[in-house]
Every structure is written in C-alpha cells, then in structure tokens.
Amino acid sequence: MIYICGDSFCASDPGYPEVTPWHELIPNSKTLAFNCASNLLIGQQVDQAIKHGAEFIIVNFTSSLRSEIMWDGKVTSFSWLSLDHTTPFDPATLDALKKIFTHIDLSTEIKRSQMIIQSTLHGLVDSGIPFLFDQGGFEHHSYGQVGTYFDQFKPYRSEVCLWDHADTSTHRPYFHITNQHTHNEIARYYTKKI
Image (cartoon, rainbow, N blue to C red; front, top):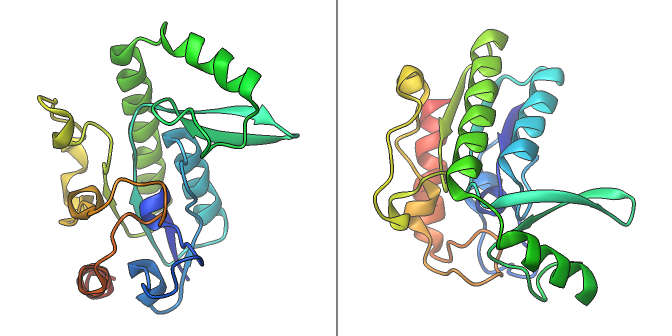
C-alpha cells in the first residue's frame, strides 16, 4: 500500500465530485491526510504509515502557522490565519485563540516546524521505506524571502510542490487545485516515481 500524508492538498473533498484529486488516481494508495493538519499531525500520519508497513510514502508538509488543541474530546488542528467560521470552534474559543495569536513568535514557530519535519524525515530514512517529500507550505516562496531547509534529504525531495499548483485559496475544495489536468499530471509523476 502507498500511503499519502499531508494537509488539505492531499485530502479528498466529496463536495467537489467534478475533480478527482491526484492521490485518488494513484493505484493501491491510501491518504491519511486531512484538512488543516499541522506538521506535528503530518508526522503522526507518517508514523502510522510506517507502522502499517507502507510500501512507499508520499509526504507533503505545511505552513508553520498550524496548531492543534483538544476540542470535543479530540485533537483538532487549525490555522492561526483562519480563525473564523471554517473551524469547529465556538466564538469564545475563537476570540481566545485570536488573542493568543498576537503573542505568537513566527521565527519560533518556523523553528518548531523545521525540527518536527527533520525528525519525521529522519524517521522515514531509518524505516528503510522508500519515500518522497516536499516541504509544501513550510516556508513556501509565496511568503516572500525564505530560507533553505532539509538539504541533507535532497535525494528524497519531490519535484512537485503542491502549493505551487494551488489555483484557489478558499477553504473548499480542500485540495486547493481545481484543474483536473494538474491532478492528472501530479498523479502521473508520483506513479512513475513509485
């Protein structure tokens, strides 16, 4: 089984059946990704894929401005930049999170994500399972001047960054790429690499 780990770019959205996401076009694959997953939760997806004996793993990381809290008895991820009606949180929780966000240090959040991603990549290498990764929204060039990261994992870096192909930044569809041809090309790329 090929496992796909990541955020919304790797998730399905049944509300948009006119587009078949790239990950659904890869034979013998299963996505563990979900909308708004943080890098920590993506790392846990990778742990799960390793535990299940994946034959191959595709990982796409995300923005440093994702986090998670306990909500309704489960860990719930969110984006610090989308504290609005797209979350399950009530108004009082949203207000509290917005107040906390004014005290978030971006450089610390970037470092936290960098360390989580590096640890996840080391775990993948140690597992011996073939994989490809992309840093996705982590320090994506659309944010402006960003650093260089993860050079020691260059042999495992995908040539495809899903964040480069986003044609919508709206909440839905979750996968943010609405061009079917683009999904087909991404699936073709990964299928050849597997």
